[in-house]
Length: 87
Image 1: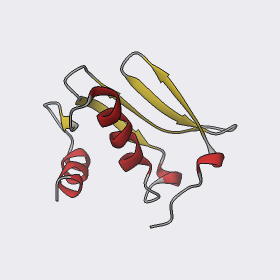
Image 2 (image 1 turned 135 degrees about the vertical axis):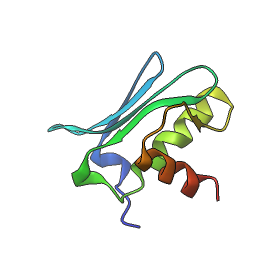
Image 3 (image 1 turned 180 degrees about the vertical axis):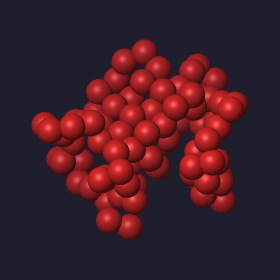
């Protein structure tokens, strides 16, 4: 896996949202609730397959002390992500 170095992006936090940005664009973000149900997760296609979604979910778990789970309904790509995370 070709992971990005933390110096390549900034992490911002707001109520229930974690966002990764660099100086040019948003790399990805996750929106979640207090029960760690992921309402939405997005990684810019240019930055996919670099471990950003995994990092976003790790941050959700750290902030809520609960393993993240998808909120219904979930997209086919979201289902795939959570199947990989729960192996």
